[in-house]
Image: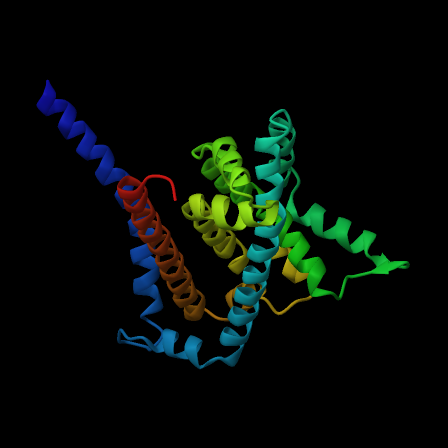
Length: 261
């Protein structure tokens, strides 16, 4: 009976692995056929030779970095204060954080355009509006990461200990709370980075040269380069998740050996 259960488990593992890997393998093989009657990396060479690839990627990477900084500056003190002083606000903050799952990005971007394209506040050509939109779209990932980190930390005890030693609020947050939730912040930051890097709707309708619209434009005009870009994007995503796992592993080791930071 035990052997039969093990065979069924392996069967589902093989089916699940095939479901994810077969399309990826097929896409990779298709990307190698850019040159007639031979396999090669011609499509990848064309992608890396295109200056628009670097320009759009660097622009999206910069916007992702600014979005991460702005989100951390806004959410870390807010969620920390809710944990410390107003625990009942958690449900309200959690409900707000789920709104991006309910409101489609296309509704969000047209709402931003309609609200900020006329006096007295005209921001449709401002990068700040794009970053604000990205903050809304990535709010569920960043909030969940910060919330999980604070939930695993004894916030009240750490705060009282720091206050008894004479620390002010900025020092408590920066030197006490942030080091103890560093792994959670890194998780939220990389999820935000991956989301912003491939985002299409906001950048497309706000007319910014981002990586998402570049991918969409290439897909309409060429055959093999989109497959190469898919493989490159997939590799970048796995590199990001590998960094997350590495940071989390080191953070767990430090916690096991040193306890609270």
